[in-house]
Length: 118
Image 1 (cartoon, rainbow, N blue to C red):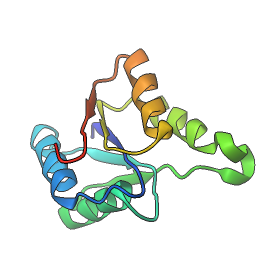
Image 2: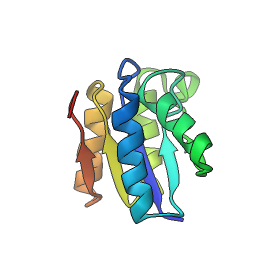
Image 3: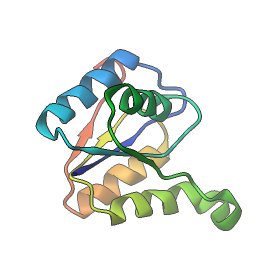
Image 4: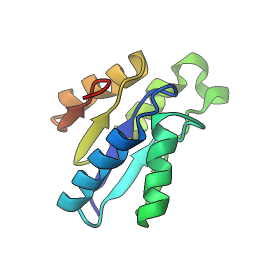
């Protein structure tokens, strides 16, 4: 199915916002596949739990710290965009989230950005 990428900070824990937006996207793409960074906490963990609860296929793109050191999350962003998702959901985080959003825009992939409490 169509792939939807999600990125967000490890300290962003707005369950209601994340589940709500993912439900909206799933209405548009019922057979969607969720791509995320596989973080052990925060936005990506919440998204992973949403996918489990909804029976949505998910693929975690975990940074390879051993291979890429500090560049790992950025290489991971590239890998996530290489599969050409139909859209990218960006929740508050760090420069890593901004990097994914910028790269997606350059590739012409729609980016939906959510601010805290939006």
